Length: 425
Image 1 (cartoon, rainbow, N blue to C red):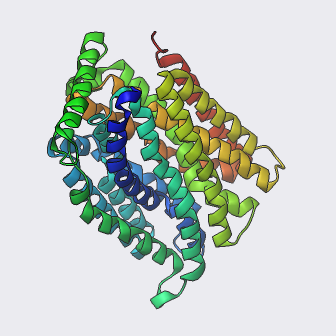
Image 2: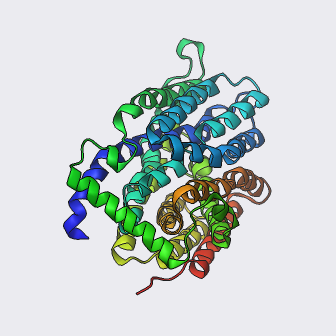
Image 3: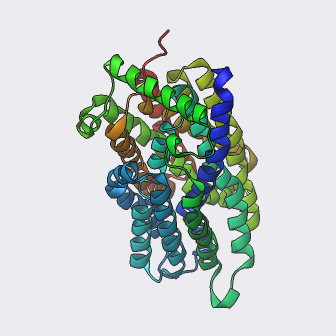
């Protein structure tokens, strides 16, 4: 493995920074509504209930169009389809600035979900064209550190925009937040067709020997899946496989913790540490900084050992215990922030390692449909998590809401430990 590592390192250096940059912008545009909420408190039609419904309705459009979008990417190639996704979501995210009532807010959030459908599972599928399973968890983690980077970079930037932009050209600070964070997606989307390569055989930046090596490794993996008897190749296989449905349930519980933290972290910091917008941004970056380092280490270790079950399961249980600790009554604000940093690191380690499991048994059309189906069902947690967190917070307090996240992350850990097959010698 190590003797051929330079080939994969060359591919990673070429592709991962582009995918990483795209996902940073995607994730910022998806969750910056959590920061916009801080400045929309004075908007007459806005409330916690409107926020939770708008945050969640994104995932309805996402769910409906996820599988078709990924099947289109599998047929047409990643370059043009990812460019289409980025340009459309950038336009819609920018238009969020002109929401004028709850209905327009809901419609734009729904359309944003449709626009982004297929992006994340498309990248997971795209990575299977280039990297065999022994490199996949690490590469997925490198790509998914964009979620952490979105928190590290996006949180302070969002806080700064809210702090300084109110009243610019007659617009509120929350409006400038959507405009300034949506426009870069459009610009990068226009460049994606020039920056990405659809398949190894199309890569002019690889030598003939390097192309042959990559394609041979991928071909060997496909034959290994076929010989194992656990493979899924057709569209029908993807939807009738019991393991795929178990993966859907596992992903749902993992994503629940991710979005519970993503959407409500600024509010938690506002309630417990500081009410100054730019300081909220800086404090929000701490958990994501920890996650960026932690998830890469966990996934590299998983690739080196070939072990998935314990890496996924124990990461989820670590997140569960940390969420529970963060909800402890009377916990100082700084201590709550530290426990949330551990929780976010655990969640991100869980989800990045998890994706190396279904990709090991899915190929062809089943991979396009199955990866998208797992992700779309899993992301329905984004519809439920903000609303349930709001209800728990309103009726029982922030501590109870965090304990709810802990319980569901505990379910993710147990599911992973029980259902993911142990490493075979």
